[in-house]
Length: 226
Image (cartoon, rainbow, N blue to C red; front, top):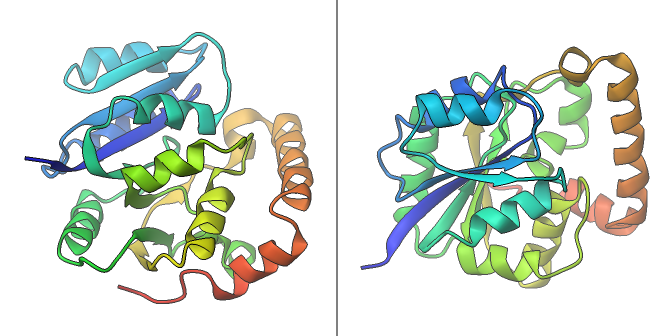
């Protein structure tokens, strides 16, 4: 019998947030497998995962190669129909919201992806619907994710690539509410690194998916709630 859903959590130096995230995720009894991918961390986060959550599948990558590659490595161990992607730096993650999302997907045969929309995001994030379009929390068919990851995707562009694939293939995508929010980069990395990261993200977004696709995604993608 095919298992329904697994969870992939990529992380890099998230010793402050990975355990609270896993505490909530482990309360969800609907997962076939929870996979954490250590993307070349140099802090204590992989040891914490191994110590406090021995039941979690832990993949250790020697070098930091980015979220997309970490997800790709995690997907290699997935043998379920669907995958839930979760960021490791979240605050206020709610296990009951995760469970409801999985059940919505399980009970909806005509849905290809559900995005967990971050309702508590700041105003400027909501203004361009980035709390939906760029949300790292989404449940997607494992086969679709595999096809997306065959492309040459780098850096911060995984969510854009997923969106583009869904649009081009006329997939049915909906959103559902989420209380989770990302940790502030300035607190996590410091002001200088945070500014540098934000600039790199803007440069990446300007090159791909391109201004036209960016506008299309912001205005029209995943507009309906499930």
